[in-house]
Structures are given as C-alpha cells and as structure tokens.
Length: 296
Length: 242
Image 1 (tube, rainbow over the protein chains, first blue to last red):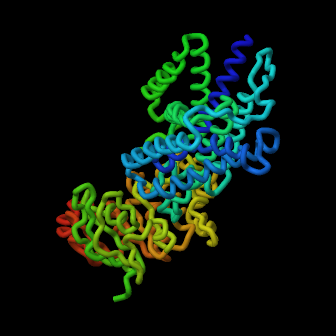
Image 2: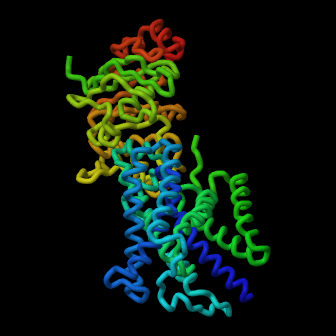
Image 3: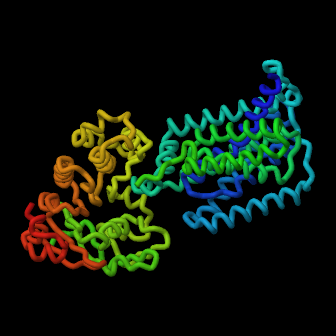
C-alpha cells in the first residue's frame, strides 16, 4: 500500500513536470502550428537562471523568500527568451514547417552548447530550500517534498491557464485561433500578438519546470530540457494539440504509467510502455484525448 | 457613374502553379448587391479571398484592388477588416467550440461600441442562444451567427461567400431576407449559386468564366436573357425561372 501511494505521488510529480513543459508546447502548436523543438531550451534557461540568481541576484537565495525570488527570476528569463525566439526566429517562418523545425532544432542544440560552454557539462548542485530535501508522510508513505511542490505548482499553473483561457480576451482569441486561425484574422484581430503571448506563457511554464525540476533532481545540467522534451511531445500528442486539459490528463497517464512499470517491471520498460500508449492513442484516437477534430 | 466602393483591376492569382484568376477586373457599386457568378471552380471564392488578403502562403497575387483611395493588396487581413471590409466566408467558419456569445464577443473591437442591438434585432435567436456552443447550431443558425458577428462593427463593404450553400429551402429564404435588409445600409459583394436568391437580391452582376470576367452588367437583365445565363452559368432555363 505504501509503495502504491509513493509511486502514485512520485508519478504525479513526474506528470507535473511533463505538464509544465507540455502545456506551452501544446498551445504553441495548437495556435501557431509551430513544432517548437527549442522548448526544452526554455526549461534549461529557467533552471540556469534560477541557479544563477540564487547565487548572484541581490536578495535571492536558496531559502524562503530568496528562493521564490530566484524562481521568479528564472521564470521571467525563460519567458523573455521564448518571446525573443518567437519574434526573431519564428515570426518570419510562419507556415514554413520544415524551416521552423530546422531553426528550432538548431537553436536547441546551440542553446545546450552555449549553456555547456558557459557553465560546463557536469551537473551543478542546485540551491534549494532545506524543507524541499525532506519527506512528508502521506498515508504511511514517505513522499519527497520536492515532488509535492511540483504537483502543487502544476495544479496552480493548470488552474491559472484555464482561468486565463476561459475569462480573458486573449484567452478567447487563443481558443478561437486554435480552432481556425484564419477566421480570427478575418474578424480584424492581429493573431500574431496572441502567438507571442503563447510563447511567453509556454516559456514561463517550461522555465518553472526547469527551476522546480532542479529542486526535484537536486542538480542542473545543460541537457536536462532535451530529455524531458521527448516525453512532453508524447504528452502533447496523446493529449491533443492545443488542449491544456488534454495535456494534463495525458501527463498524468504518462507519469503514472512510467513510474509504475519502471518499478514493477524492469527499469526502462516504463518508457517503452509510454511509447506503446502513444501508438495505441494514435491508432484509436488520432486527434488525441481532447484534441481538435478536423471539421469537413 | 457613381464612385465604386471597390475596384478590382487585372487581378491575377496563382496558387501551387495553377493560374486561377487571369486578370479579373470589375467594380462594386456603393449601394445594393453585386453578385459574383460563374460555374463551380471558376475562381469566385479565390477572388473574395484575394480581396481580403487570405490567399494561401506561396500563392501569388498581382493586379490592384482598391477600396476608395486605398490599395488593399499587401495589407494584412486584420487591418483590411478593421478598415471596414467585412468578410463572411464560405462554410460559415463559426468557432464550434465557443459559445454563440463568445463568437460574437470575439468580433468586438477596442474603442468601438459593438452594435448588439442591430444584430439581435436581425437575429433574435442569437441572443436567446448565447450560451449554446456554436458547433451545436443548425446550418442556418451558424450562417446567421457568421453574418451577425460581422455586423457588430460598421462596414464599408461586405464580402459574403455562398451564404445559402447546403441550407434547407425555408432557411435559404430567411438568409435572403436578412441579406436584403443588410444590403439596405451597406454594399455587398455576394457569391451565390442559388439563382432565386440572386434574382431577389442582386442589382449588378459579374460573371466569371475560366479565371476571367465573361460578363458584367445589370443582374436582372442577365437573368432575363435565358440563353446568355445558360451559356455563362451552365444552368437550364427551368432553374432560372423556378
């Protein structure tokens, strides 16, 4: 029983990480049709900026309010980089899918190389609050606090994103644009502003994943974003492009499946099962769990 | 002649190597309904989309389109629409996952009071069904929504693409009635295959054939010339007089 609770909560922690990366990826793809392979870079920027801030930014540190400040700095940095990437590199290439893939793949490689050249390839110990190293007893299981932090953060982000999409003018534009971008412009709306906005939001969420992932794993390394990105892409496809709720369901499914199978089966089998789940979803429901259906 | 609201001159559109429009020129009168006619595939929809700047990427547009003194080509779609070019696309394109009220709210613009009174007077049903998802509306109701959201703002010209396509005869009449009332206050460039609707609404006609303008003139005269209508549109006299 304890093991099941522990696996469920650590699986949800992993799911939270996937969701933070996948939600932005999904919105960007759903709205702007951009497959952003550089999304992992935003995560890396968030992680390193938080790490840097806690050592160098006045007032920031590994504990208490200083930690919050460091994370906020990391999130803002990730968001800023995402906006710059959209404005400078992606905007001239809308509806040119091949070029976009080349540019974003190139950018993610270059970004990882830049982080590596600046701070080295070895994982750096991540400054984190003492309480995040501890465990909390939940139904008899000793659950790492960093995992719980991730779950809470992802839940807050999910709630905030849904409220934003549901209640704001830009949320309305994004929901409409995911369905039919051309018709949004034909109502007199400059949809490109919404593109920049989803990049900013996606970059911020990914950077948060980077910062809290740093807390969870205890270290930062340049390649962290890339490996998470693969699973985030799988989550986006399973959940349905452009659906935040779909991403949340899919992230939970993937995180739990991975965690349970890796524990009860052999290590690595869980990752394989995730790919299997992807194949099954693609065969039975190609638009994803909550994806947009092509209308005739 | 009165100044036209829209002048299209030598408009050419190439999409994926196909020369769809080959030098189309016509004018839209500042009042009434100008109907764009022609057989399937002659480029009626392509003409409307080129005017409003929605030619797909990689497509090539040449020639000139002017609304008043302003040249429209090369200006982004959202600016054209804000300048008063209202566009009601083929197949209506309402946002199925959004509610009726949200579809309408999307068309609101900053600094402009949306004309909900006018729209709800024309389409009382849109007010009643505000919370319903647009995807669950009937085809006729979706068409009303597509027209209604454009009418929330003032327009200098409306482009309306096949508003009666796929609708039941009774609903076709309703849509035609609405367009008739709309056309009292704003000029309309209409693509329409249903000749009964054309007879009811159209003042001027432009007939396209194989990417070129084959005939322009008074719409009612065109419909009286059975032989001409038949050769231009490929319809039998029975359809014309039905």
